[in-house]
Length: 603
Image 1: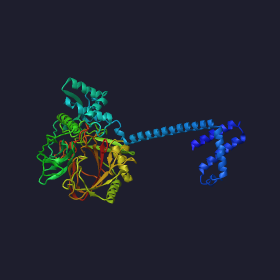
Image 2: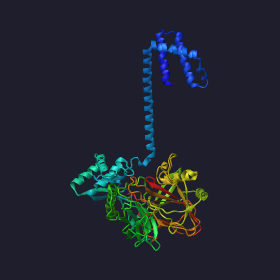
Image 3: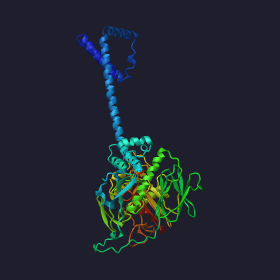
Image 4: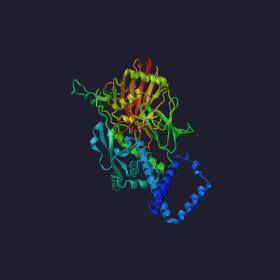
């Protein structure tokens, strides 16, 4: 349309000039333009008028032909000007559309990138230049960990740095063979830490680095007498705990998936472990036997282990494997992790259950220096007080976190939704597990945050408890995720325990995929007690360090009370001592809700 208008306007102008600005002809030109424009906008109303008799059409054609012969130069100029103007306009539109598309793509990328992941660095905890931030040494009981590695591990370390530089979240680019190694080195040419590694490789057979480890406080410091703050606790000593269970992490270093079994009186399938991935167990005791088999041959025990508390990380590393270049790189990264884990365990006096490198948690953690220590937080104008129930692991109780009405509403919501038999947490996002009623015999359902006002209010309150931006626990309208996964928090899990039902000691954390840059896992658990008129059902932390109770730390459920505990340590490792259980119900039934918050996001 613009093209036609331009021709008409140009022709009118030329005709006017040719006829010495004759008013009648100029008016006729303008009238003709208006009629043409009107016909474009009202085609149905003027359709009959477009079909005049043949004589009129023939006359018009002859007149136009004569004019073209006489003034072909002017008409040609008009057409060329019109074409040029149209092309320029079209280019402007395309440019504007391209700009809008680019902006839309950028905005979409920013929306898809979780806010706390924009500057996330898996290698943030790591330095080979001796520049580790010592200001955080005393924060949360952190200390600098100095370690050294054979120089052949310089390459897998560099690959971790390259993953951060490229933001290669799934290591798809980093783990692509020899050609990518040179690209990674090019990408790190100006990287300070990589430069320090190269200098060390040239000068020594080993490279020295530094990171952090968390040191548990001695039991003597866990007790403070407010009436006598100067009381001498030197005679206090940590009691021997009755519970002897612990967790085991099994790592599959073969190129094929395997099935992990517990070889007890009745053989039990634990789960499937993918190549170069891991799975965990809970409440394992010294002397128990485990084995791995091929997927399709459960009687073919490829390897078998009798575990002890000193072997909490077990590797299945069959000899004689034919690994391709990418598999070799994956294997080398596990060997790097194994080197670090050994030195970490010597200093921290606990197993390294995470995967090296692992940064400090991005979420804050409340301090827990002694039993009974209190903290205060506010939510929607109301003050809440929390107190330390356990120092190691960090456990807090928050009385009156929920009102009676909120508790009753959650129970009613769960009943209306319908409860299903509870499933086990495998300890690995890749593993498949069978339901085992001897371990967990409750029923549960899920309540999403956006399903009801009371759920939304509790998420907001939980965010304030955890000192986390409330928006991080909010599902975006355009976010497509699993039904009980939204943002960094899962849906609220409402659980019912009937008489004799229980949940034996277990961990809430999961072992993330080895080659995931963010290393996502459950960071904290918030338990919400919804009733209290029953017997049994205590929440027990059987490995909690203390000087008074051989059974660890037990919390008696009280309606409206919340319990917060961390599944991670301040140095980024999983907290093995966060094992907890729900004792069997003796009388009545127990209702509670679980809220799991992830670090740094849900996987």
